[in-house]
Image (cartoon, rainbow, N blue to C red; front, side, top):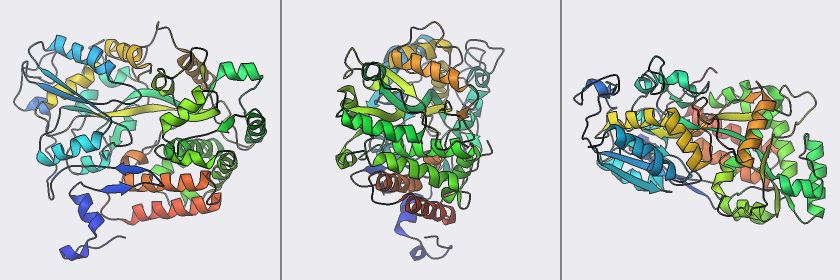
Length: 485
């Protein structure tokens, strides 16, 4: 509920919590999501002055941000599917090579908000953060409270590989735009991910199966897989309902075109009740009928392990999946990617269209002790050496153009490369609401589980999600964001 300005008693508890950066948001059944911005109440936004312009080291061609040579650097890495070997074995050594006097403190955690919220509240923040995972911090709230350093200076800095070009010229199109908050870049999205349905190509070959290209084929395939004792499609309802709503959004974009996802981000009136969204939700709900109810209580690694054991045929995820599961994947298992099936014969985008976008946000706190070092760390990540090393250690391709050339690709990445080639210009756009409106995103997870596990219809899903979007739009305490492409 939105409240007009008045006495302190006129604001809600949730609004007060948001103002001090301590919103605790409860997700759907069995799922918890803590989004943390992290200042004390009434904190003024940090100055937007360039960190390189303030007291620091000498600015030079090799040190464009003026990093003090002996300033310590603290790096906090989300240790999830990407691991943290890329930081310890690639990026941190590159930084140490550039600044041999600097001491680097490395912190790895799967609980980003839980780990960092008290530190933000106390004014003791690290210099660079990989803000990812279920327990990620609310980037939009952090930006609103002046806790994020704007990254324009990073993108306009000279590239390490070709100083005649800016860093922004060395990355895939859309990378900078994917990290905008309030029209300015605050997030460095690093991993170039593709999203779709993942399967074991060896199992499919053995069974004589072909991934479905339409939802009619999908329903037929589901019966075939079930007859073979294999769950045709599954996701983890406990902590990864977003894997399923990604598929709903991708299918809606294939039906109507990318404008529907732009309108979702912009909280356009009625966008969740458009025909494309209802058709997509209905199609996926039909597939959800083939899932066992127990999947709603599982986490992503449990469902992924079942797929590795040959118990799940198609799994919705991004291209980090293969690396995330490498310790549990049998030698004979071969990951492969197939696009989401076409919903109607009149879809504006073909079956081959896939969602491919920059993801995995890295941020520099504005109140860090060494923000110049944080910027330089990101610039090193965006070098070809840094990006190639990341791919070798994490198994994931970065946004740095050409950095993976010459690398021997795993089955999953080879399949990804083939899917990108087949898609051509038919790319489903990214979504930003997940970084902008965490309360809304939490409600979307809840309603996605309700839809996919058969508690509500597609029409009810669209109605409930639209109501949540309207609530977000009407809440004057939430800063509204806007994208044009």
